[in-house]
Length: 55
Image (cartoon, rainbow, N blue to C red; front, top):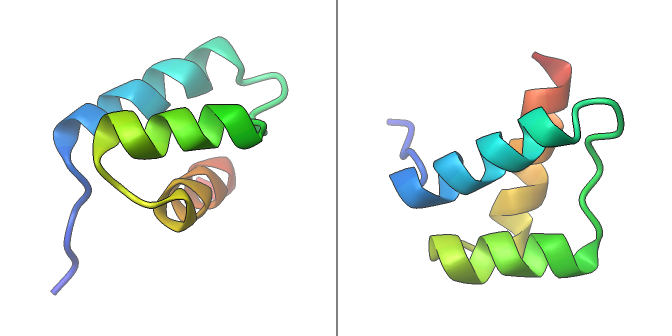
């Protein structure tokens, strides 16, 4: 079963992605922010961004 990320994390990252779609590579500080604000790990942020770029 696929576990989804907390909604607030997805909202934060989606918003950032839309604003930065021309270069969707968050820096360390951005990733740290998404992780702590969204209650997820930096690894999960990296994976979400990688998946988002592929889709």
